[in-house]
Image 1: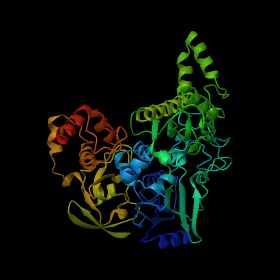
Image 2: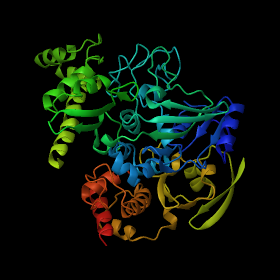
Image 3: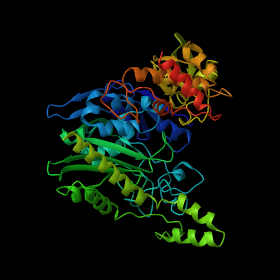
Image 4: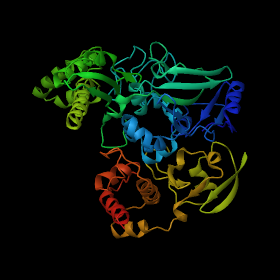
Length: 365
Length: 163
């Protein structure tokens, strides 16, 4: 790891003053992402400002019924908090589905918001990556795209946002509070992360010298009836192929009064499914509606297919032909390494999660 | 270089280190405490697990300077029924992951005792899920065992958990 200067900040003012003085500095919270990226020589701060002792570790109720979560609350404490478990179960579940027990004890809420890509080409210094080195190109496009996104991608980057917690926060209309030498700023969670476009190395709307101090959740009675469902390549401790955060309120007549839906593993940023929500509001809480909603959201999905052209469906054709002439293994390999399965997987996971919430609603009504 | 005072297994140790030295390297290479193992050095395998103020962490992703004043417990400071249980149930083969497994299991049992749910806990607002095999496997998923001694590890943890 490259040497750096170390500053421990006892309070928020010291932290924001220090970063204003050191433009190439980074804040260090739990270290689960930054220390790893520094060891990989991807992050190269000249100064590390340790914020892990800042007094931002409270979870408290707000006068309007919402909840304020300090940026230094660790992931494990957030998931264990009785208020979060009862009022926003989707948030507790999303955190519990991320990383491992050890990492959740270290990782902070603020750090989780800013965690960087897990695209294998971002980590591989020998590969081309526009996120790591602007203008270099992207080896994921024609490479191993199994983990890549299908929504919000660009010609420069197809990396999926890795966070589970952020998927729940997207569904819950959270607000992020920041501090800098210019003062306090509050921005809706939906505006925090930005799509890659031509500048995939710029991942959020935050200025380099802004410190996240808190995340606020609005009062949202509907969120008490919510779930997080994650599908991954092994049963635990793996990033999502697809995940769904959902909250559902069904009226006595069986129609959807209100819904919140967000997706992980498929979006270039934590993906709020507004198109699906629009289909669902007022519609019968039925399997058919859930399927239509999923289709509406996923219609814009862009996949990397098995063939080098990237045309959906071509890999399947190649696979079948391949089996007949003895080259089947190559075709199947293509399907597993590419991300085209994610559209159908996302559709099924959305439907299953909403159906589960609707069934629970029926049994308690 | 900075002078750092680390509390390890009840003793304060003072070392001069650069800020980029991990807690893992400080323990192994500066303090000569090699019970804590280095596996992946990127938080993926759990071999480096130690307890900080009673909570399990990956010492490879922790900078030593950041843990000044925190109470660090390594396998050298552990005297716990889990150790005999791992032996009884063949919870290891080569033994390289075992210090991390034991420290992780101690932290995990404390989390469970405090009522913390896991990703497989169905009732989030209940008093605390029973430590079934599924619960143990989920809660211990941050510790890999390349010998595949998982069945023995689950049995050992379960035996101690139900005491």
